[in-house]
Image (tube, rainbow, N blue to C red):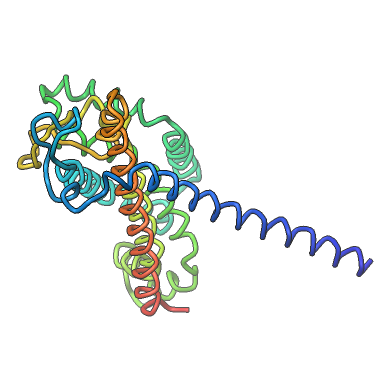
Length: 283
């Protein structure tokens, strides 16, 4: 029996190591493939200049408009989604509901929203945009991306706040704190998880193309107003790949490499902030 258990342990340990290595290999293959295709076009001017005349025909310019546009769009959407997600997650986990139906239905709705394709969010935001009389703009894109990020962020924060010990909440209430003050204690306790959830949602938002295709528009200029069209890296990659010029297609791979680096830096920042906030929680 002991020998059988050790054999099973070795088998599953081998499977876990294989899966871990597979994930790492896939990441490196993606990075290497886009870098090899876009290395010839990747230079300092590309990330510091906006597109010049004929940029999509292989002439001078860069993707600074798309880089700043993606950061502004995803940053604004993440901030908007965070303002909604944290109160919803706190209500589901800290405040005591009289029944289980409302929390169950809320989590079920969020799970369904999580699985809806982003193009559907873009179509819905487009309908809302037309109803409100808005045009394709940074504001419309922020709303669309916020809808994409909302279920991801809310469910992630909800699961994180479930890990807060009940004894901590009871101690807070026993000391005379009300539910709102207890919510603050719970949020502070799970700050590392909340930071991770927010940055994961940001990474999801900055890489989305379908939701902003009809809502954010596209522009070769830097974003200056919430009501102006804005360029994004995913759409810039899409437009560059659709050109018949090999040089412009290589620029698309260079743009993809820049976008991937932004997401990797976001993940790295998440690790750093998580470790820093982890020092202030009660264990």
